[in-house]
Image 1 (tube, rainbow, N blue to C red):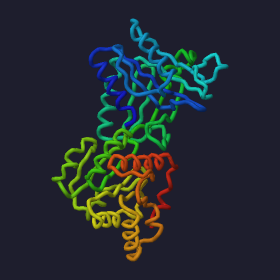
Image 2: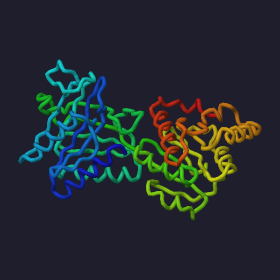
Image 3: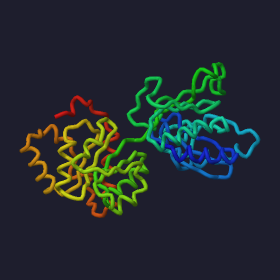
Image 4: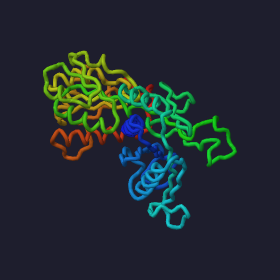
Length: 346
């Protein structure tokens, strides 16, 4: 879950009885480093987690949060910064955008929601987060307001809290200042637990993907060393496809220890409605496997969504370099509009 390190920082501080502040970007336009949904935790002892975009604006607002936390009753506020020199809210930056950051003190009433967020981050369960002046509220599952988000973790609404200092005439119970759909950035199934799989798991975990590794070799050292995978499934590669669900948030990567097993897995996944399907291998290997599948009746439409050789072409050689190239391609796919599943089938 995007922001889980922020929730951990806030929860740990409140558990110790330490004052803490949540900084969250509620609005942004133009060229600005902090997009809606960027969030940061600041504690009274100086611990930081997350980011609201970095640079001078972040440093200024972190300092403001620390000064407020040092007082007897930390105050909340919406802070608008305009990245132009001719504005009364000038940030000192010249990129031309603007953003609004909500500084919100956190208290004991927020602990149950923070605990729920951390549990759901561990399990990969999606939900909706609503943040008001009085408390954080977490709703598991689909967004109750019916607002769709193409990229979980981004803001789906950034609204002024009715009844707050920003809207003094409203009803404080009418709504929240900020809402977002949250959940993993995608569910990744790595078919193969070798060196590339291990390196890729490390990179994708930092990008908030929920990772499952499938392999038929329980004794592989790299599989045992993979601390970033949320699940490790020992299964014959001939049955791996049955362990991978369909869906617009599912990414499948074929990186088994043999060409035969790669082909075996691809035969199960080709043409299925997945967000991303990639296979590791040289151009020659890929061409030979695809030629055999076409002879066996797989259509160009079924095979057309396969990304192989996998990854952005950056001349990568080592497992770490290959992992970076694959992750870059996955990020690009994640930013693309979702293609209707009716157009994916063979």
